Length: 132
Image (cartoon, rainbow, N blue to C red; front, side, top):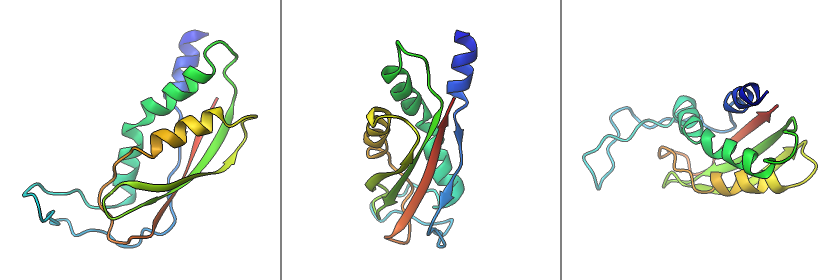
């Protein structure tokens, strides 16, 4: 049961919808303060950042429900990516969980994530996390 539960948790289903990501940074875009190449902003690059932080999402889930039955559900978040690549205005759009503990934990984690620098200041990300 524990192995199956870990498999379920580690294979959290994620789907990416970028509401207004129509522009992309040129593939040779250089940050003016560095010679290091900055990855282009795209759905793939955003999904890559989110996937690199899935352990934090699982950590929230496990820490909140460590002594309880692991509930199934989903939480849909929305946030802006500003011109520094940082997140802004992280909100929960929808949750099927009975309380806000899990959403609050994940919201705090998302607020620390760093994304590739977008061209458009108003880049809105909508992203659901599924648990079960």
